[in-house]
Image 1 (spheres, rainbow over the protein chains, first blue to last red):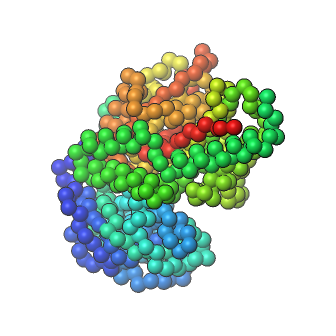
Image 2 (cartoon, chains in turn purple, brown):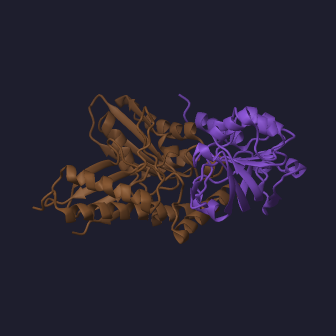
Length: 192
Length: 278
């Protein structure tokens, strides 16, 4: 188990509500979180649009959700996280503007780990859990709907969505720790 | 012999295909659910346990709400066993494709199939060579579907090893998961093909994913344990369970070849079989 002794792993999840403030700076990688309140979805296209035209919502304390939901009749049918690493080079301006949390799956690059320092956290949502996610989310509106269902920025209200702090604001990155451990294990077993 | 153009035959094939997708997309097979449940019980790490619990809760919600388990409803892969009285012709392929179109609306499945270079979406999950259909002779007329999501499929690999490098098979399997990390949404099932030809070994690896995960041979268990030693864990956040099971399928190969393929499957190892009733 990588860094088993110092993984956060709080037994009771920390309740958070957007807009987020400095409370996110107390979170440690490995902490369990339940997030409530308004979040904004954004994938590749929405990030590019916001860089060009500006952010259409108040970014102060906002949470960005890497997700392309399935929306039918203005209702969320499925809304699992997408791979966050695609947004590695597109997230800096959001954090500069006051965004406090990025929600997705698979973690993000070293650049984002640096940008999150003293500012915000990366929160991991379990991949593939579309039905669970949809049962805890309510659609409240949309920006950039011309980008299509997957790429638009949906305004979604979270109701205690279960997340794990994957990267904290102190530079700790669970994914990096797990990867380092896996490489060591592999080398130990298969040295040629 | 039943005539190929028989409309009732075509209708039965389409309907059975659609029913199989409805089942596969919404309800995970019992053996997979049991394996995830056992993995949760065995986990001592809080994060890993939480991830597995989220997956189990999601499986229940999908079934209750009759929603797809995952928003990536995959591309359609179909296995058919054909009894001698049913003709194998274009009509059969067309009827299966029609079933996929019906399922795309009925589940609903996300329209995932595009042309490879122009990236034009057909909007109904069909296309040239899609659904991927594999036909075998059999005594019963059955349709088995395996909707395959991209996150895990993209991490699959193939190698043409040297016959003297049998001991490298384990290394190649474990290395596949080391490279994949958390990207294929672990805990995964690994379908491993050994032998056959360059194309055949990939087909073997995929067919291995149809096998129940309740039991593993000694060799499969050994591979599974070696992958789990990596500690990648559920969703790449660390933990005991990176791999729920390894399933191996073998076939004869050239004396100078040792093809190996690993088909990576996310925890949503969706499959369902429907018997076509005429």
